[in-house]
Length: 68
Image (cartoon, rainbow, N blue to C red):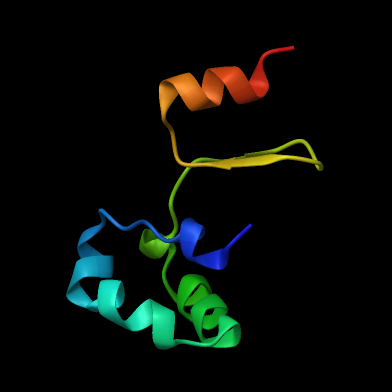
């Protein structure tokens, strides 16, 4: 999954840092470092069963991904 999808794009910290324009120019290592530096940058919830993952909560997508 693309690393950019883990960023909370609607968060205040994301906007303060101007990441909308900067992320595409950053290396994967720089993005990982940024995500690990501030939990407010991470989109939640992150749910995985070890094979698939959903990031964020959109009810319909979440429900379709995790029904048995």
